[in-house]
Length: 130
Length: 113
Image (cartoon, rainbow over all chains, first blue to last red; front, side, top):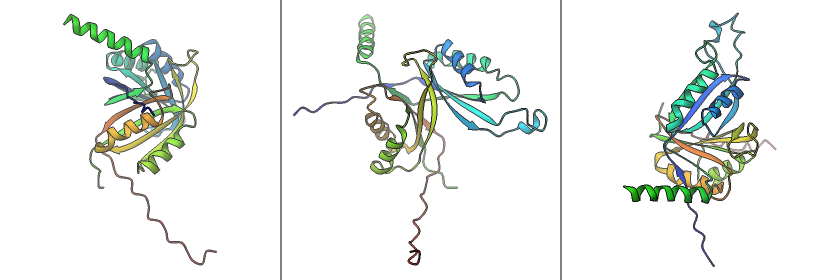
C-alpha cells in the first residue's frame, strides 16, 4: 500500500482589492482590472447604507443596491490595478462607491505541475547566476 | 465587548454549491463556528471563454491565530486544490475579532407534545 504525499503551494506577496459600487458597475470594474493585468474577479450583491441622504433628491438618486468586487492581485500589479479600477468606476465622483486594498498573508489555488516546474527552473537559474 | 485575541480571516472562492459541505466539515470536524457563506459570480483566467461569469460560493471563516495554519491547510486539502482547479483561497490578518458564542440550548418543554 502506497501512501500519497500531498503538498500545498502557497502564493505570497498578494493583495486584495475590494470595491463597493452601485449595482451594474461590477462588469466595468472587472473589465478594467483585467485590462490592467488582474487574473479575475469575484462579485456579489449587497445592500449599502451611508450618507446617501445627502445626495440627490431625498437620497433616491443613489441606489442602495451594491455590488462588491473582490480582486486578488500580485503586489507588483496592485497599484496599477487599483488605479485602473478607481478610474473605471469613476470613484472620484461623490456617491459612486468606495474601494480599499488589504495585504494578504498568503493565498492558495491549484497550480499545474508544469508551472511549478517552470518556476523552479527559473529560480534555479537565478541561483546559479548569483 | 470582549474581543478575541488577534485572529485571521480565511476566504475561499469556490465552485457553486461547494460551500455548505465545507461549512459542515469545518463545523463538525474542526469545531469552528464563525463561518459565513454567500453566493457570487466570478471570472478568472482559468475560464475557457474570457469575460464569462461563473456562479461561485464565497465562504469566510474567522479563526484564531494559533489555528490559522492548520485550518488553511485543512480547507486546501478538503477542497482538493492540489489536484484540480476547485477555487481560490487566501488568508488575511484581522485587527480585532469577537468570539462567536452559540446560544445555550433551550431545554425541551415536556408539555410541548
